[in-house]
Image (cartoon, rainbow, N blue to C red; front, side, top):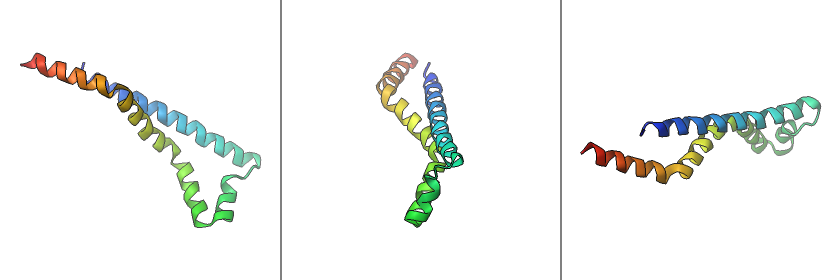
Length: 91
């Protein structure tokens, strides 16, 4: 039962990746439709704009990290209690 927490972490990371991917696809659809949001960043803000473009490209990976952190904060106490209960049973 203690290894079930890794399934929760995996699921949280997967959901975070999918949400980040959808957000990135929205930005890509806006760019293709002619509403240049990211394209204007580099022109208007220079190096800072390019950094923002790279951050938008990394949104799915940030979603993985945030999904795992969300699971950790939501279920952290329950995971700690299960670890204590499992440790007491082994003795």
